[in-house]
Length: 342
Ligand code: NAP
Ligand code: F7E
Image (cartoon, rainbow, N blue to C red; front, side, top):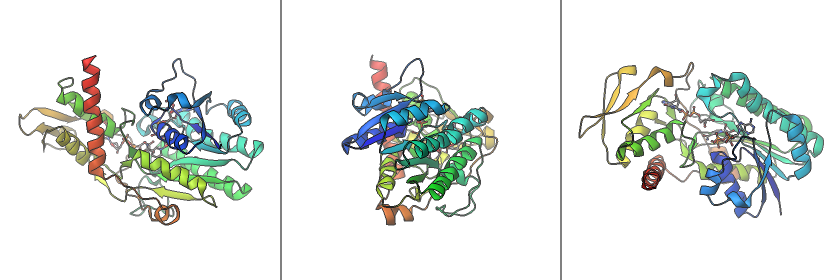
């Protein structure tokens, strides 16, 4: 039985990856950071919470990381733990760098010392492309990070490449574009939108207040993206891969489609922070824009080229943008109904 250690077990990808590895017969060790309450809601939703062996692991703390890896002696480590919210990284840049950049290096140093044969996956991000230098973005596209989060991920990415080249270790970096699901955190724009749409539909919220409606992302479906992580680690040679859908859509398109899935058509008026989205049928304002949701530096456009992953891993996205929005809205409509029946 193979042993996998997953950092960030309580996050969206931690939950889907745990389920995948358990299905494949792995013994899964879930690393969580110690808080007053271990929140297992995503793992419980996927019915895997009681199948995981939990270990407290703080990415700030080298000794904690070292002892945990030494004790478990995993075959594979998936480093999904991070301060992952780009907007917040401008508020807490040093914390973000410590966890997201140095956290990865601490794990690599521990692996190098304990057992350099342990295979390692680093959760790199399309945010590293930032102000994009070419379109679509692939593994050879130059990086241009636009936030403390992206700069931290870029350090983690390059140190992973550097340790692979310096010490011959089996280290992979997956440059994943945005991937979403009903388990997405509520602060990210997709889930904030679908959850708000459901609350508006059932009368628990008046409107949603957003930032930049024109930024564009390549949004895929998270359960498919964790498969790519596992596939990278199973190859004969370690390498880096872009994982994406190859499509790009604006926040505005996502919002319109989310409301449409709840039976509401949106019409837009005004410009910039004065822009408003109204219910076509009633004229009620449902969407407003506020400066507090804009970032000091924005990533305006992302669209990935996943052809290397397709060729070498046999991986391709399956869920379309339309289906993704539908899955998320339908989930949140049921969630809000259930919450309010109690
Ligand atoms: P997520 O839901 O935000 O999960 C992040 C995880 O990291 C949570 O389990 C969190 O724990 C944990 N964490 C935060 N600070 C920590 C610390 N100091 N020590 C230990 N653990 C800590 O993120 P996700 O969407 O699953 O993404 C997984 C990884 O892929 C992240 O590294 C993210 O940056 C990266 N990524 C995500 C996307 C995407 O579109 N989802 C795309 C590219 C890359 P708590 O639950 O206690 O906060
Ligand atoms: O923003 C705009 C915002 O926070 C997407 C993380 O998983 O994916 C994620 O990072 C876009 C941005 O995701 C609101 O300005 C407008 O242009 O959902 P997001 P992100 O920043 O792309 C990458 C790949 C990661 O690696 C990250 O870990 O939407 N936007 N209005 C808004 N964004 C938010 N959050 N809230 C708004 O109200």
